[in-house]
Image 1: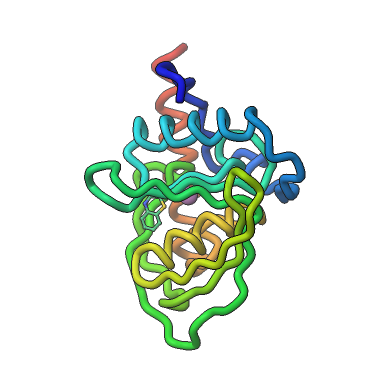
Image 2: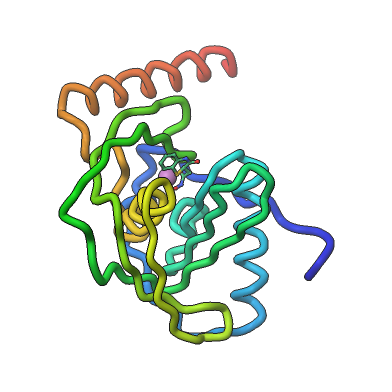
Length: 176
Ligand code: GNR
Ligand code: NI
């Protein structure tokens, strides 16, 4: 473990780089661990419970998650693959570090099983439910260029797009 970490810049919607499809990791080396450490650091700094590499402009299939309040359960997922989804769904309010300030209800399967790799390149199976299951699905979506706002009605999504465009205009006015 190092004692200094890099805070990575998080891309914001509608940045087209958030739509890229991430590629599988094929080399399990020290630089992978370094990237994961920096992703955890960035996620904690931004007060998120998950972060996908896509969000920091790295288009590799890497995810970090910690849904605890005390940074006590770090989960890193490499090349995660959903192998089963429950037919029962649950609705939860979701937010995203790439769509700051917006929280909307999304319905998703409430239990998932994934196949994933650890930093040593060993294959693992993980069963999840509740918030962890939601978070895993939200993050795997990022690796596929999908955002939670894509699940909203056109009306809601358009409203968010309009508000973000307005915010940007206000910021530019101040800068000018
Ligand atoms: O911090 C986050 N909170 C959250 C809440 C409900 C469902 C998903 C999430 S993930 C989000 C961080 C993020 O944007 N990850 O990609
Ligand atoms: Ni997100």
